[in-house]
Length: 457
Image (cartoon, one colour):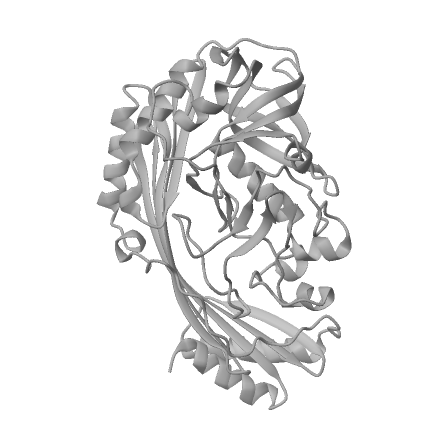
């Protein structure tokens, strides 16, 4: 009998036959290699089981977790969860458990070599990155992870699945500049430390001795690294089912809120980004179109927010969604049609970015966003800083590096009808620094971006 089945059986006996019970067991293997000053300075790995038990009985709900999975630890988990359920406040938003349902099929099975990669494999990627940085000081990390999840509940739903992911993220520095590059994939063999190190070096050298420019609204080309931040913010604040129910998001279903060039999907099944095909409530998760040709078509829900909205859950519950709302996990902004671009020298990431730059009369090329914070969730106005390279574009050419700028910008308004002047033909994958989300993000050329402060304030 599995741990999940053992806990489910024990909880049903302890809570009584009328109790609704579900159990989620996640075994995570996470391994990390860090480097700084162009040397590896840390290798760490951890493997742990987290067992989460949820009981709903007599109109009350309690949730508890443990990482102690011997018989005594599991018995204690059941005992305290049953006790908590008896004294918890009434839960009028309880949406019931998911019933038996078939899971969608991944287009490719999880790669064991990615989830179980040895330190030597990560070290080889780091070595290639540092050597390609060509004597510039390099720092960053390589990691691989595997999460095996088992879910069972008292309604008969049972699901299991594996997610694997590999990430390489680093910078190369000069005394006055730095250049960043990063990549995520379901296949560790897809990571290219030499190409990423060379890109970071080119960016760092091209952004030395930047000049200060006046704040204001500029046409921009956002590189994929900056666009990944835009997608995560749109997902977390905008396409969040709880926020939509509460009226605190910009989203208006069925309206053309974005430029017709924008199609945004949440897709765990295809592409290099890692994703699970069911959530912590056992609900299947399939490809979901959030924006099609500029029209907002969907938000994501867990069972609780779906009940309130009168729709079905989209399979986006997580441990915090009852409080923070459900969020998209594997966002992809569909790139423009065209063949994958070849790598080119210079500060731009690739030829897809350079093609967008060529159309700009006067504007800025932005590599990355940093320290972004929400000022107005209803309009989704964000403030943050540029990072890792900004350049002035004049008559379709990159002319000089620019000092970092602060921006204050509504993200959906930047992508509104008529504001998206171009989308790159290549959408690399990135892993979020803040959670388990991923994004596949092409470069964007936008009509305007509001910069509100320069290096001097």
